[in-house]
Amino acid sequence: MAHQLKFSFDVVLAFLSPLIIIWVAYRLSAPWTWADLRGFLSLRYSKPFYGPFSLQKAYQSYAKYSRLSANEFSHKRTAYNSLSRTHKRLGHKLGYPEKLNKLQYVTDLNAVITEGIAEVARKDLQVDDIHTGPGDLGRVREALKHFIRDWSEEGARERDRIFEPILTVLSQINPEERAQKKVLVPGSGLGRLAWEISQLGFDTTANELSFFMSLAFRFLLSDEATTSKNQHHLRPYAHWFSHQRSNESLFRTVSFPDAIPRLTPNLQLAEVDFLTLSPPTRTLRNPESFWSSSGPQDLPGYDYIVTLFFIDTSLNIFATIEHIFTLLRPGGTWINLGPLLWTSGGQAKLELSLAEVINAATEIGFIFREDDICAQRAVECEYTGDLSAMMRWVYKAEFWVAAKPK
Ligand SMILES: *[C@@H]1O[C@H](CO)[C@@H](O)[C@H](O)[C@H]1NC(C)=O
Image 1: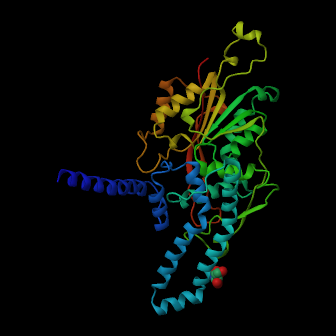
Image 2 (image 1 turned 60 degrees about the horizontal axis):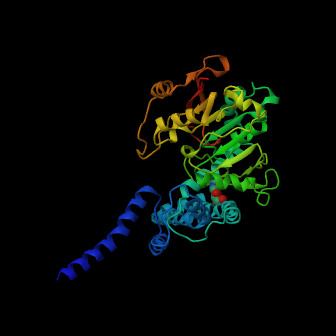
Image 3 (image 1 turned 135 degrees about the vertical axis):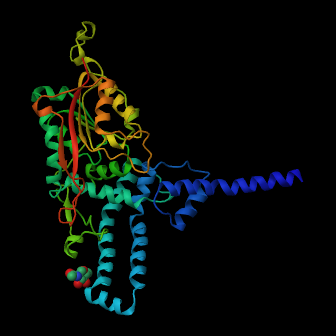
């Protein structure tokens, strides 16, 4: 009897635990398909659970882009088919069913890019081609929009507004000294800002946690995938029918990249959590100076840390600011530009106001610069906005420059 009881308890447990895990995963991510669910169940014991920004998750999402999008078409089709016959006739006159077909067609064209990205992941990172867990269509689309923001001519307007204050501060450094200056760009996304900084001559490290972003960046960095300007084409707005003036603007094509980035000795990529980074050591120009205590210039740490639309992604903003402080050398500079859109889903441990962020940074030891080009100020800007849409989302992002004392 006792044996029986224990047996059934085990069975219940064995049955329940995957369900609980699935429920948690469901709460954390996009809807699952049955195939995802089956794949997840069958591999649950042989594979660890992959985080939402992991290589495996990002790879699968890119690889499954077509299939994930197909779910959406069928939803749109079903909705249309539920119309009355008269309304369907009207819809037919407007060409709405053709529009749905066109969506499917342009999604297949976009899939050329997502498959190219998955291919780079297989070649460069030897990612397993095993399909576990659900894909995240939202994050793929977001990353695709970053091709437009970071690497298209259409995105130049958006970029210029936010890069300009940052690059102006960095441009004050004498060009001959720049190669000796280490710059870290956490949350570097598709890498345009880090690339621009490296083009100015700085020793730059792009740091990105999300493989949704870094796989897309690697697609541009790859000698095989990207060889010429404006070689790739995307219809980045096709899936969102809201706020569109016409079919032309909905389905329009944007080409990229407007420049071809490559990793070089002065542009490196660190695909890890920012909080796990440690201060870089310095290669001393003059070994003697190690003994003659040469001053803060030669202490380990970055000379500049540039955070653009980054700090509000922190689960713990105190830890982020503290870590920026730790990674800078004494006398090093933190340049920030961004809003305070705290990580969604109430996951952030703290959701501070701007005044509170500034106070926290001051408590941690930062000294805010007030001189003209460094003065703290609001910068109106957009983020992956659609230039021809009927709506515009404008941030009044805050810019500041703060120093770690010598
Ligand atoms: C919108 O696009 C579809 C598919 O290309 C076409 O059939 C329809 O006529 C278009 N409607 C307008 C108003 O341009």
